[in-house]
Length: 401
Image 1: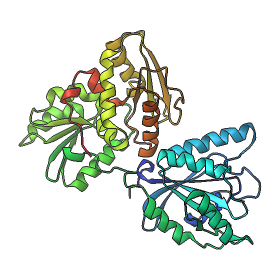
Image 2 (image 1 turned 180 degrees about the vertical axis):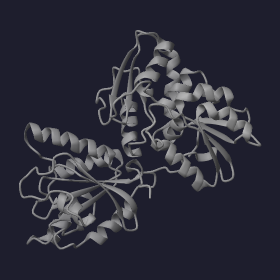
Image 3 (image 1 turned 180 degrees about the horizontal axis):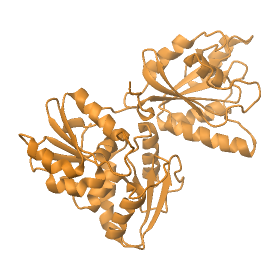
Image 4 (image 1 turned 90 degrees about the horizontal axis):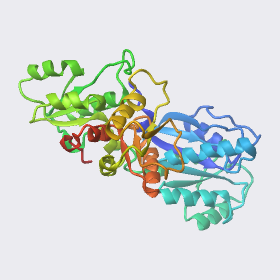
Protein backbone atom coordinates (compact mmCIF):
# COMPACT_ATOMS: atom_id res chain seq x y z
CA UNK A 1 0.00 0.00 0.00
CA UNK A 2 1.34 3.45 -0.93
CA UNK A 3 1.96 5.50 2.20
CA UNK A 4 0.46 9.00 2.41
CA UNK A 5 3.28 11.46 1.54
CA UNK A 6 4.48 13.59 4.44
CA UNK A 7 3.54 16.76 2.58
CA UNK A 8 -0.11 15.63 2.53
CA UNK A 9 -0.33 14.78 6.25
CA UNK A 10 -1.68 16.99 9.03
CA UNK A 11 1.47 18.42 10.64
CA UNK A 12 1.11 18.62 14.42
CA UNK A 13 3.98 20.42 16.16
CA UNK A 14 4.63 19.77 19.85
CA UNK A 15 6.20 22.81 21.53
CA UNK A 16 7.18 23.69 25.08
CA UNK A 17 9.99 24.28 27.50
CA UNK A 18 12.85 21.88 28.12
CA UNK A 19 11.51 18.88 30.08
CA UNK A 20 7.90 20.03 29.84
CA UNK A 21 6.83 16.53 28.78
CA UNK A 22 6.83 16.91 24.99
CA UNK A 23 8.71 13.70 24.23
CA UNK A 24 6.62 11.70 26.70
CA UNK A 25 3.48 13.05 25.04
CA UNK A 26 4.53 12.03 21.52
CA UNK A 27 5.43 8.55 22.83
CA UNK A 28 2.02 8.27 24.51
CA UNK A 29 0.16 9.41 21.39
CA UNK A 30 1.94 6.91 19.17
CA UNK A 31 2.20 4.10 21.69
CA UNK A 32 5.90 3.82 20.82
CA UNK A 33 9.18 5.03 22.36
CA UNK A 34 10.06 7.31 19.45
CA UNK A 35 11.48 10.25 21.36
CA UNK A 36 14.15 9.95 24.05
CA UNK A 37 12.78 10.81 27.48
CA UNK A 38 15.32 11.98 30.05
CA UNK A 39 15.64 14.27 33.04
CA UNK A 40 18.68 15.82 31.35
CA UNK A 41 17.64 19.16 29.78
CA UNK A 42 18.00 19.44 26.02
CA UNK A 43 17.77 15.73 25.21
CA UNK A 44 15.72 16.51 22.10
CA UNK A 45 18.01 18.16 19.52
CA UNK A 46 16.75 18.16 15.92
CA UNK A 47 12.96 17.85 15.65
CA UNK A 48 11.79 14.23 15.77
CA UNK A 49 9.14 13.50 13.13
CA UNK A 50 6.83 10.51 13.07
CA UNK A 51 4.17 9.68 10.49
CA UNK A 52 1.16 8.18 12.27
CA UNK A 53 -2.55 7.52 11.84
CA UNK A 54 -4.59 9.08 14.65
CA UNK A 55 -8.02 7.60 15.28
CA UNK A 56 -10.78 9.65 13.67
CA UNK A 57 -8.26 12.08 12.12
CA UNK A 58 -6.22 10.07 9.62
CA UNK A 59 -2.64 10.55 8.40
CA UNK A 60 -0.62 12.92 10.61
CA UNK A 61 2.98 13.94 11.11
CA UNK A 62 3.92 14.51 14.75
CA UNK A 63 6.89 16.85 15.28
CA UNK A 64 8.69 16.80 18.65
CA UNK A 65 10.86 19.91 19.10
CA UNK A 66 13.66 21.15 21.32
CA UNK A 67 12.76 23.31 24.33
CA UNK A 68 12.07 27.04 24.01
CA UNK A 69 14.78 28.17 26.41
CA UNK A 70 17.60 25.85 25.30
CA UNK A 71 20.90 27.55 26.18
CA UNK A 72 24.34 28.03 24.62
CA UNK A 73 25.50 28.01 21.00
CA UNK A 74 24.10 24.53 20.40
CA UNK A 75 20.87 25.56 22.11
CA UNK A 76 20.56 28.48 19.70
CA UNK A 77 20.87 26.11 16.75
CA UNK A 78 18.23 23.86 18.29
CA UNK A 79 15.93 26.84 18.75
CA UNK A 80 16.34 27.72 15.06
CA UNK A 81 15.15 24.19 14.23
CA UNK A 82 12.16 24.69 16.53
CA UNK A 83 11.30 27.96 14.79
CA UNK A 84 11.48 26.19 11.43
CA UNK A 85 9.20 23.43 12.72
CA UNK A 86 6.72 26.11 13.78
CA UNK A 87 6.53 27.29 10.16
CA UNK A 88 5.32 23.90 8.96
CA UNK A 89 2.96 23.11 11.84
CA UNK A 90 -0.69 23.04 10.70
CA UNK A 91 -1.53 23.11 14.38
CA UNK A 92 0.47 23.37 17.60
CA UNK A 93 0.28 21.52 20.90
CA UNK A 94 1.67 23.99 23.45
CA UNK A 95 2.83 21.84 26.36
CA UNK A 96 3.16 23.31 29.86
CA UNK A 97 4.20 21.22 32.84
CA UNK A 98 2.06 21.10 35.96
CA UNK A 99 5.29 22.02 37.76
CA UNK A 100 5.53 25.41 36.02
CA UNK A 101 3.90 28.60 37.30
CA UNK A 102 1.76 30.54 34.78
CA UNK A 103 2.76 34.09 33.94
CA UNK A 104 2.49 36.81 31.27
CA UNK A 105 6.22 36.86 30.53
CA UNK A 106 6.62 33.14 30.06
CA UNK A 107 8.00 31.60 26.82
CA UNK A 108 4.62 29.95 26.28
CA UNK A 109 2.90 33.33 26.01
CA UNK A 110 5.50 34.63 23.54
CA UNK A 111 5.09 31.55 21.33
CA UNK A 112 1.31 31.70 21.59
CA UNK A 113 1.48 35.18 20.02
CA UNK A 114 3.62 33.81 17.17
CA UNK A 115 1.16 31.01 16.43
CA UNK A 116 -1.83 33.34 16.56
CA UNK A 117 -0.12 35.80 14.20
CA UNK A 118 0.33 32.95 11.71
CA UNK A 119 -3.23 31.70 12.16
CA UNK A 120 -2.02 28.37 13.55
CA UNK A 121 -4.60 26.62 15.78
CA UNK A 122 -3.21 25.97 19.26
CA UNK A 123 -4.16 23.40 21.88
CA UNK A 124 -2.84 24.06 25.39
CA UNK A 125 -1.72 20.83 27.07
CA UNK A 126 -1.14 20.73 30.83
CA UNK A 127 1.25 17.79 31.17
CA UNK A 128 2.57 15.68 34.05
CA UNK A 129 -0.82 15.80 35.78
CA UNK A 130 0.09 12.61 37.66
CA UNK A 131 2.44 14.71 39.82
CA UNK A 132 1.42 16.21 43.10
CA UNK A 133 0.48 19.69 41.87
CA UNK A 134 -2.45 22.14 42.32
CA UNK A 135 -4.01 21.22 38.97
CA UNK A 136 -7.28 23.15 39.31
CA UNK A 137 -5.46 26.40 40.11
CA UNK A 138 -2.90 25.80 37.36
CA UNK A 139 -5.54 25.05 34.73
CA UNK A 140 -7.65 28.08 35.62
CA UNK A 141 -4.61 30.37 35.65
CA UNK A 142 -3.44 29.20 32.20
CA UNK A 143 -6.97 29.51 30.82
CA UNK A 144 -7.26 33.06 32.16
CA UNK A 145 -3.90 34.02 30.62
CA UNK A 146 -4.32 32.37 27.23
CA UNK A 147 -8.06 32.17 26.67
CA UNK A 148 -7.56 28.45 26.01
CA UNK A 149 -8.99 25.62 28.10
CA UNK A 150 -6.07 23.30 28.87
CA UNK A 151 -6.30 19.60 28.20
CA UNK A 152 -5.00 17.80 31.30
CA UNK A 153 -2.73 14.94 30.26
CA UNK A 154 -0.60 12.37 32.02
CA UNK A 155 1.60 10.56 29.52
CA UNK A 156 2.71 8.27 32.34
CA UNK A 157 -0.83 7.21 33.24
CA UNK A 158 -2.19 7.59 29.67
CA UNK A 159 -4.87 9.98 30.93
CA UNK A 160 -6.38 12.77 28.81
CA UNK A 161 -5.18 11.40 25.46
CA UNK A 162 -8.69 10.75 24.11
CA UNK A 163 -9.76 14.32 24.91
CA UNK A 164 -6.59 15.64 23.27
CA UNK A 165 -7.27 13.69 20.06
CA UNK A 166 -10.86 15.00 20.07
CA UNK A 167 -9.59 18.58 20.28
CA UNK A 168 -7.10 17.96 17.47
CA UNK A 169 -9.98 16.68 15.33
CA UNK A 170 -12.15 19.70 16.17
CA UNK A 171 -9.45 22.33 15.55
CA UNK A 172 -7.61 20.92 12.55
CA UNK A 173 -7.70 23.48 9.71
CA UNK A 174 -9.92 22.59 6.77
CA UNK A 175 -7.42 23.73 4.13
CA UNK A 176 -4.27 22.05 5.45
CA UNK A 177 -4.26 19.78 2.39
CA UNK A 178 -6.15 20.98 -0.69
CA UNK A 179 -6.47 17.58 -2.30
CA UNK A 180 -8.46 18.63 -5.40
CA UNK A 181 -5.33 18.95 -7.51
CA UNK A 182 -7.03 19.76 -10.83
CA UNK A 183 -9.86 21.86 -9.38
CA UNK A 184 -12.31 22.88 -12.12
CA UNK A 185 -10.05 21.66 -14.95
CA UNK A 186 -11.25 18.04 -14.79
CA UNK A 187 -14.46 16.25 -13.85
CA UNK A 188 -15.71 12.66 -13.86
CA UNK A 189 -15.65 11.15 -17.33
CA UNK A 190 -13.09 13.61 -18.76
CA UNK A 191 -10.25 12.20 -20.84
CA UNK A 192 -6.92 13.37 -19.41
CA UNK A 193 -3.54 12.86 -21.09
CA UNK A 194 -0.43 13.02 -18.91
CA UNK A 195 2.91 13.75 -20.58
CA UNK A 196 5.69 12.45 -18.33
CA UNK A 197 9.29 12.63 -19.60
CA UNK A 198 11.34 9.80 -18.08
CA UNK A 199 14.79 11.33 -18.46
CA UNK A 200 17.93 10.99 -16.34
CA UNK A 201 16.23 12.99 -13.55
CA UNK A 202 13.38 10.48 -13.20
CA UNK A 203 13.92 7.86 -10.46
CA UNK A 204 14.58 4.41 -11.90
CA UNK A 205 11.57 2.10 -11.75
CA UNK A 206 9.12 4.65 -10.37
CA UNK A 207 7.40 7.96 -11.03
CA UNK A 208 8.04 11.23 -9.25
CA UNK A 209 5.64 12.21 -6.47
CA UNK A 210 3.57 14.88 -8.32
CA UNK A 211 2.89 12.42 -11.14
CA UNK A 212 1.80 9.68 -8.73
CA UNK A 213 -0.43 12.02 -6.74
CA UNK A 214 -2.04 13.46 -9.87
CA UNK A 215 -2.77 10.04 -11.37
CA UNK A 216 -4.38 8.85 -8.12
CA UNK A 217 -6.38 12.08 -7.86
CA UNK A 218 -7.70 11.74 -11.42
CA UNK A 219 -8.65 8.10 -10.87
CA UNK A 220 -10.50 9.03 -7.67
CA UNK A 221 -12.26 11.79 -9.60
CA UNK A 222 -13.49 9.29 -12.20
CA UNK A 223 -11.41 10.58 -15.11
CA UNK A 224 -10.15 8.46 -18.00
CA UNK A 225 -6.38 8.65 -17.75
CA UNK A 226 -3.75 8.05 -20.46
CA UNK A 227 0.00 8.47 -19.91
CA UNK A 228 2.97 8.70 -22.24
CA UNK A 229 6.41 10.24 -22.63
CA UNK A 230 6.97 13.37 -24.70
CA UNK A 231 8.21 11.47 -27.75
CA UNK A 232 5.08 9.30 -27.84
CA UNK A 233 2.58 12.16 -27.51
CA UNK A 234 1.84 12.38 -31.24
CA UNK A 235 1.18 8.64 -31.49
CA UNK A 236 -0.98 8.72 -28.36
CA UNK A 237 -3.13 11.54 -29.75
CA UNK A 238 -3.54 9.63 -33.04
CA UNK A 239 -4.75 6.58 -31.13
CA UNK A 240 -7.47 8.53 -29.33
CA UNK A 241 -10.91 8.80 -30.97
CA UNK A 242 -11.30 12.38 -29.73
CA UNK A 243 -8.89 14.99 -28.34
CA UNK A 244 -8.36 14.80 -24.58
CA UNK A 245 -10.25 17.29 -22.44
CA UNK A 246 -7.08 18.10 -20.50
CA UNK A 247 -3.36 17.67 -21.15
CA UNK A 248 -1.00 17.79 -18.16
CA UNK A 249 2.71 17.94 -18.87
CA UNK A 250 5.95 18.13 -17.00
CA UNK A 251 6.94 21.80 -17.18
CA UNK A 252 10.28 21.07 -18.85
CA UNK A 253 8.36 19.75 -21.89
CA UNK A 254 5.93 22.70 -22.05
CA UNK A 255 7.10 23.95 -25.44
CA UNK A 256 6.98 20.60 -27.26
CA UNK A 257 3.65 19.67 -25.72
CA UNK A 258 2.09 23.07 -26.43
CA UNK A 259 2.97 22.69 -30.10
CA UNK A 260 1.22 19.30 -30.31
CA UNK A 261 -1.67 20.03 -27.97
CA UNK A 262 -5.06 20.03 -29.81
CA UNK A 263 -6.87 23.36 -29.78
CA UNK A 264 -9.86 21.68 -28.14
CA UNK A 265 -7.76 20.52 -25.17
CA UNK A 266 -6.90 22.51 -22.07
CA UNK A 267 -3.16 22.56 -21.31
CA UNK A 268 -1.46 22.79 -17.92
CA UNK A 269 1.49 21.30 -16.03
CA UNK A 270 2.06 19.37 -12.82
CA UNK A 271 3.94 22.33 -11.39
CA UNK A 272 1.12 24.75 -12.20
CA UNK A 273 -1.38 22.42 -10.55
CA UNK A 274 0.73 22.18 -7.42
CA UNK A 275 1.05 25.96 -7.36
CA UNK A 276 -2.68 25.95 -6.69
CA UNK A 277 -2.52 23.14 -4.13
CA UNK A 278 0.53 24.28 -2.17
CA UNK A 279 0.80 28.01 -2.76
CA UNK A 280 -0.92 31.17 -4.00
CA UNK A 281 -1.48 30.67 -7.74
CA UNK A 282 -2.80 34.20 -8.54
CA UNK A 283 0.24 35.70 -6.80
CA UNK A 284 2.55 33.31 -8.68
CA UNK A 285 1.01 34.25 -12.04
CA UNK A 286 1.20 37.99 -11.31
CA UNK A 287 4.82 37.58 -10.17
CA UNK A 288 5.80 35.62 -13.30
CA UNK A 289 4.65 38.52 -15.43
CA UNK A 290 7.37 40.61 -13.74
CA UNK A 291 9.87 38.70 -15.88
CA UNK A 292 8.92 41.00 -18.74
CA UNK A 293 10.25 44.00 -16.76
CA UNK A 294 13.60 42.50 -15.68
CA UNK A 295 16.96 42.90 -17.43
CA UNK A 296 20.59 41.78 -17.08
CA UNK A 297 20.89 43.43 -13.63
CA UNK A 298 18.25 41.11 -12.12
CA UNK A 299 18.98 38.96 -9.07
CA UNK A 300 16.84 35.83 -8.89
CA UNK A 301 16.50 33.18 -6.17
CA UNK A 302 15.64 29.60 -7.20
CA UNK A 303 14.39 27.49 -4.28
CA UNK A 304 14.00 23.71 -4.32
CA UNK A 305 12.19 21.66 -1.68
CA UNK A 306 14.41 18.64 -2.36
CA UNK A 307 18.04 18.36 -1.31
CA UNK A 308 19.24 16.05 -4.06
CA UNK A 309 22.54 15.83 -5.86
CA UNK A 310 22.00 17.72 -9.13
CA UNK A 311 22.28 15.61 -12.26
CA UNK A 312 22.79 16.55 -15.88
CA UNK A 313 19.92 18.71 -17.17
CA UNK A 314 18.48 19.30 -13.69
CA UNK A 315 15.40 21.49 -14.15
CA UNK A 316 16.05 23.88 -11.24
CA UNK A 317 19.83 24.12 -11.51
CA UNK A 318 20.37 23.83 -15.27
CA UNK A 319 17.29 24.18 -17.47
CA UNK A 320 15.57 27.05 -15.66
CA UNK A 321 18.77 29.14 -15.32
CA UNK A 322 19.42 28.54 -19.02
CA UNK A 323 15.97 29.89 -19.92
CA UNK A 324 16.43 32.87 -17.62
CA UNK A 325 19.80 33.80 -19.12
CA UNK A 326 18.44 33.40 -22.64
CA UNK A 327 15.61 35.80 -21.77
CA UNK A 328 17.42 38.31 -19.53
CA UNK A 329 21.09 38.01 -20.48
CA UNK A 330 24.12 36.13 -19.24
CA UNK A 331 24.97 38.69 -16.54
CA UNK A 332 21.94 38.06 -14.31
CA UNK A 333 22.64 36.78 -10.80
CA UNK A 334 21.02 33.45 -9.86
CA UNK A 335 21.23 32.03 -6.33
CA UNK A 336 20.01 28.47 -5.67
CA UNK A 337 18.96 27.02 -2.30
CA UNK A 338 17.61 23.59 -1.41
CA UNK A 339 15.56 21.93 1.33
CA UNK A 340 14.84 24.08 4.38
CA UNK A 341 17.54 26.62 3.44
CA UNK A 342 15.71 29.85 2.62
CA UNK A 343 17.03 33.37 3.35
CA UNK A 344 15.27 35.39 6.04
CA UNK A 345 16.09 38.60 4.14
CA UNK A 346 14.70 38.45 0.60
CA UNK A 347 14.86 42.16 -0.08
CA UNK A 348 17.84 41.89 -2.42
CA UNK A 349 15.97 39.71 -4.93
CA UNK A 350 13.91 40.86 -7.89
CA UNK A 351 12.12 37.50 -8.15
CA UNK A 352 11.87 34.15 -6.35
CA UNK A 353 11.15 31.00 -8.36
CA UNK A 354 10.13 28.03 -6.20
CA UNK A 355 9.67 24.39 -7.15
CA UNK A 356 6.24 22.78 -6.88
CA UNK A 357 6.83 22.05 -3.20
CA UNK A 358 5.53 18.48 -3.27
CA UNK A 359 7.90 17.61 -0.38
CA UNK A 360 6.51 20.43 1.80
CA UNK A 361 3.08 20.80 3.30
CA UNK A 362 0.88 23.75 2.33
CA UNK A 363 1.48 25.56 5.65
CA UNK A 364 5.24 25.65 5.13
CA UNK A 365 4.93 26.80 1.52
CA UNK A 366 2.49 29.53 2.50
CA UNK A 367 4.92 30.74 5.17
CA UNK A 368 7.46 31.29 2.39
CA UNK A 369 4.84 33.00 0.23
CA UNK A 370 3.84 35.31 3.10
CA UNK A 371 7.51 36.03 3.80
CA UNK A 372 8.01 37.13 0.19
CA UNK A 373 4.80 39.15 0.14
CA UNK A 374 5.69 40.82 3.44
CA UNK A 375 9.02 41.97 1.98
CA UNK A 376 7.48 43.05 -1.32
CA UNK A 377 9.34 40.45 -3.40
CA UNK A 378 7.54 38.73 -6.33
CA UNK A 379 7.44 34.93 -6.08
CA UNK A 380 6.38 32.33 -8.61
CA UNK A 381 7.06 28.64 -9.23
CA UNK A 382 8.82 26.53 -11.83
CA UNK A 383 5.84 25.75 -14.07
CA UNK A 384 4.39 29.25 -14.09
CA UNK A 385 7.82 30.82 -14.66
CA UNK A 386 8.71 28.44 -17.51
CA UNK A 387 5.38 29.14 -19.23
CA UNK A 388 6.04 32.88 -18.93
CA UNK A 389 9.61 32.54 -20.26
CA UNK A 390 8.33 30.53 -23.24
CA UNK A 391 5.62 33.09 -23.94
CA UNK A 392 2.74 30.61 -23.48
CA UNK A 393 1.47 31.55 -20.01
CA UNK A 394 -1.71 32.98 -21.54
CA UNK A 395 -2.46 29.59 -23.11
CA UNK A 396 -2.04 27.62 -19.88
CA UNK A 397 -5.20 26.54 -18.05
CA UNK A 398 -5.16 27.57 -14.38
CA UNK A 399 -7.15 25.57 -11.82
CA UNK A 400 -9.69 27.14 -9.49
CA UNK A 401 -10.01 25.42 -6.11
